[in-house]
Image (cartoon, rainbow, N blue to C red):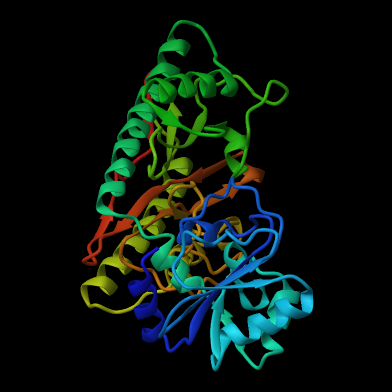
Length: 394
């Protein structure tokens, strides 16, 4: 935990403090920021208050008095619930505006962790509770230059996997085989494991109408053979097997055959142009040193698809934060599922993955890249950008 940086950030945002609260290790975000072990047993409520000015304050239960001993500050110990309330009010002192892991109207569910009752308790002291979402973006979602290198390494392995997989599909079909989506998924898993990647599920291998399902999962009971004339979507993600590693996440499209049908190309080009609209906006805003919010980038991407007449077929947000988890806790590129009003900050990574899904035409298209904004505001696409559908020779 960097106390000085947190207090400086609070002052910049005119907040009187940041109140961390936890019960049974529910707040993974807070535990990470404070450097506490999420696997360590804890059974009672605790509070940790970082004021914008002054010494932090700790409130712990008498049964677990050492819970926050690794953190700086004055310790207070409670036993009955009345004492808990009394000491918490005393800790907050004259604070009028306090940040918590709270999201008004549950707008950002990733940051909506503190229960309503605890928010009501703090408010009963005459304190206004505001969202810590932007603070989380600074202190939990920020990626160091060293950790960013792990993202790039993972991305190279994923890129090698998608290229090798498209080649493998062609080779098997040339031999008279028609590998199923599940068999190709298992082939990809082997390459990714051999490359040293960790991934909990996936990747997605989806042909034709299955590509119209954004979260299709090949299983023995639903996987179909891949054959000549098929459109194939590969969505793959993973990170290196070492502490601090950052995920990479990409999606590519391929066609089994030499001549890609014009309809597939038409839809892919719309998706590609929408994807690149995000990069263009981000580059312009950061070059001009202007703020940009997650919802704004989603709007820019969605406009390209809507203007082309396919807005109703783009059925998910444009992108998600990427960090230690493939879906991280930082800002998302979203004005559909939520209005993400968090600012896109330097040192953060996120996906850019628009799609058009046409189940009535038996296919769907998605193209996904990862974007990283460096600490000095440079916008970097962290891997190759697909320009045309891959032709898989058979």
